[in-house]
Image 1 (cartoon, helix red, strand yellow):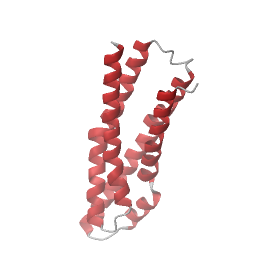
Image 2 (cartoon, rainbow, N blue to C red):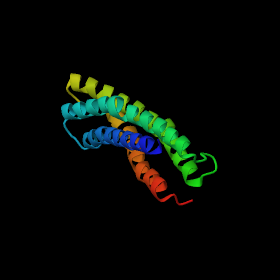
Image 3 (spheres, rainbow, N blue to C red):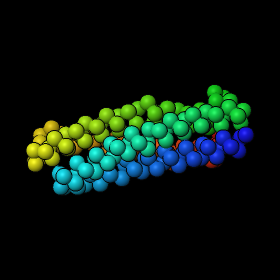
Length: 156
C-alpha cells in the first residue's frame, strides 16, 4: 500500500511541477516581451495554466503526501524534516500561490484592456512594475528544490 501511495504522490508532484512550469515560463517571457499583444497572450496562457495545472496539482500533492505520511506512520509533528517540509508547503499554498494568482489575474486583465486600446496604459505599467506574479512565482519555483532536498536527504 505504501508503494502505491508513494507512486501516486510522485505522479502528483510531476503534475504540480508541470503546472509550475506552464505558469512560470509564460510569466518570465511576458516580463521581457516589448510587444503588448504578445505579452497579453502570454499572461492569458499563464492564467489558464494556473487554473488548469498548478492548482489541481498542488491540491493532489498535498493530499497524496498526507496519505503517504499516514501510511508510512511518520509523525508529522516530531519528525524534523517533515515539519520543515510542511511549513514550506504551507508557505507555498497559503502565501505564494494566492499572491501569484491575484497578481497574475490583475496583470492579465490590465494587459487585455491595454491590448484592446492598442497602447500601454498607466495601470498596466504600474502593475508590471509591481512584479507580483514574477516574484512570488519565482519564490514558489525556488521552494521546490528545498522541499525536494528535505524529502530525499531527511537532514534532521
